[in-house]
Image 1 (cartoon, rainbow, N blue to C red):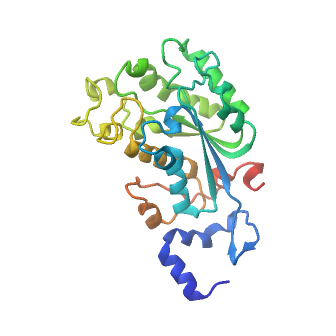
Image 2 (cartoon, helix red, strand yellow; image 1 turned 30 degrees about the vertical axis):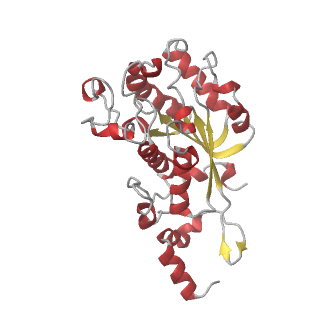
Image 3 (cartoon, one colour; image 1 turned 135 degrees about the vertical axis):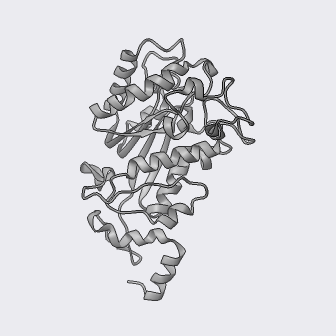
Length: 296
């Protein structure tokens, strides 16, 4: 028990610590150094180069898993979550692809442990002509991949939009029309959450007329192009630092949307440029805590 003055100082330093008084529903470990700590929840981020952080200025700081870690630390405290980046550039969900995720070291690592949450975002490389068969084959291998990962809770992420057809030899119709239709169905079959990264980064149903005809450029009038194209980086597939920040905020909302504890609003806002995160106080166990591995 610290003094009241120490407590006031801690509260002033970070408003997110206010959630401690509401965490009675969370399993707790014994007090350490006068502070009661919950065992960290583990989050595995599975994906391709967009998870890896390609085209960020510094993937250790600006990949979406790195920025997700910051958001979770600010909202819940630095001892509550451990986010792991298992992104592999070029990886496919399909086992017959030119670089199947199944054959990578990241796959071996993610399947060697149990996780509280697994966020899966794959498919962008599957739609290259040499990899694509049909939607049925893609969905079958995507579902098979989910069954190999030992997680208490899954979140299926709809990949970002492709801002220009044939960029990286990718099919914009499959990415911008197909994934938003197919992946929520996959998620529903596995009682998984869904994060609409497609929509968060500017994807719309009428993308054929809304997106710039020649793709995003520094002077594009289409606002969401700012998530892909800036002085830092300009690409039609991979977000830039700002886009990865928005992606992290969308994933944060998805994995905390049913939490019974509300992150300190001021603490979340303090993360520069982060999108407003909607939280819930539903009378249900947090999605992150469902299953036997809430505390291991």
